[in-house]
Length: 244
Image (cartoon, rainbow, N blue to C red):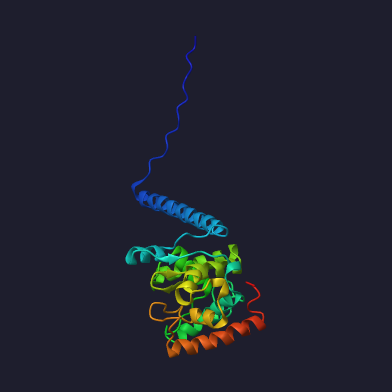
């Protein structure tokens, strides 16, 4: 009986020494690329989930809770927030909220022209910073914020963005969200805020730990007065249509 001859498996050519660095770089780049794709997929999934699931806390809220021993925070839906509060927040922080896709190029250019003395962040950017990232002025954080904001704008509705913003914004030390703020400062629910009360809450948002809505300084009063007019203006000219 003839013996069966085994076919010899061709040997792979030996990797030359000079080619090893290239192969190493290719492998590293492949893993980096896969990692980036996984991070993007996770970010999309989390963002999609948060269209219906309310974030129970945020990184900053968690940090403040540990620092001060707990926070005052109650989530309320947009239907339980006085419409004038939503308009006041937009008038104060981002009057073109309904007109941009997350980044207000005009506001950013104005902020750069003034040397950073004014903020250029939209409400959408502030939501991304508060919900996903951390507070700070590093270029790395700002870059992540700029990358993630259009994704949030693409997945969430404008009303949802504003609802989350009003529920996670800080209004005093340990006081987060408009419901807790309304009770804290005025003893009323967020649904029952008057135009003046809403304007004063919006007026302290840039610096809530140094300003008071119930005992406003003269500058807060002036700012609140302008916000009352601004809230009426964006309602009249249609710049509040996307969330009402």
